[in-house]
Length: 519
Image 1 (spheres, rainbow, N blue to C red):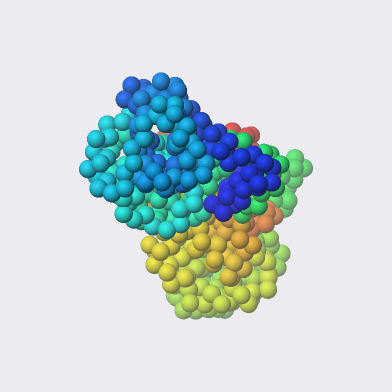
Image 2: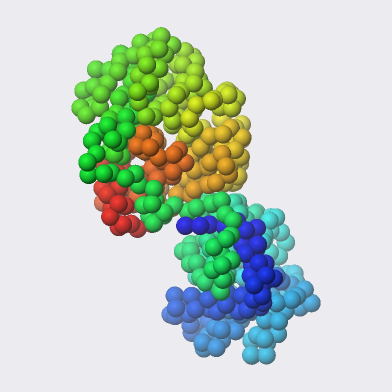
């Protein structure tokens, strides 16, 4: 699913208007009519109470004027309130403001004293937010901030026109505060800020509608973001020929585990097999080898020299020999935080001869040493931090990261030449080239211990099966979330275990293969 930034959508609009010759007022007409249809169809029970259209002075307000006119034509009582002077309304918006008034629509203009002015409009059936669209780039202030706060306390359905006011359309950042919409009706393409957090939490249901952008324009638009739903993810599934054997589907080495952290190693290795990998070898400290070997019947094992229950530098030669005939490496879950382990991890990150995914303790040992990523000459790496690990890697606070996840992930991936999987709600996979994939599956039930180990094993599995790192990561993230979606009816969104997800992976993958998907 192609997703656009504000600038990319603006470029499409301008090409349609200037090069193709479709007037902007026509696009505005189509947009407002599409919003009116959604309001009328989805909230028919609110018709008697009517609609309040809250408009700004720009083109988004113009869309609101068209929406109001069509709702009136459909028999709805409509009140239109503009947070600007009449003289501030220009161009296509001014045309549609005049048309609305000539068709019997009443318009109230409010410049200040917002709360007292809006109090008489506090009982609509539906509120249409057409204050700001995709062009907003600075925090809301003054009467606009007051209006957003008033909307969010109104307790009525809210239909946002193109974008809930207060969200940066290009990265999902909340610009001071934002409208919490029931439905967002967006035009032509979804926007990045609508599918990435925190913006996605304000969008409600997202409806993408056609406003007459010609196919010749949309087909050649530049974009760098994809929303990963079932349709997209299915295209990336590795082919499994009927004549294949275990060697056909890759051999993954998992380097994980230490005293007290055997579960992480076990779940990572088993998840790789359940993701379709043909062979998995778990390399772990010899002191925990009997434990993991007793739990993993199908996984091969390689006990390694250890120090105080963690892998030691003496194991480096054995690890390198082990990797020579393998397809990928998963490194880090439960590996331990000892100093010697850190030295080993950094050597492997710099010199590993196969594609690798680094997680958990592996990321901790990378903290303060990210320059080694730039020195790496081998195949690409995948890093899978959660926000806390990302904070340690970058020196940013968790709040700073969560406020602008898109730009944070893109900058890190580009700077260090890695695939960066920034975990969390709407996990982002960022590529060195600037491309990003935003995962649309999963739910808050994934917020429990061990889920990252399962994801690491799954990414490693797809690396070993031959997918390039970005697609291996985006596909694994989707299937991981899809497994949680499948289990929601049985487990809800609390009490879901990582092992539940692990056992569901084959079914989630098969459903995707069969084209049965729900996200």
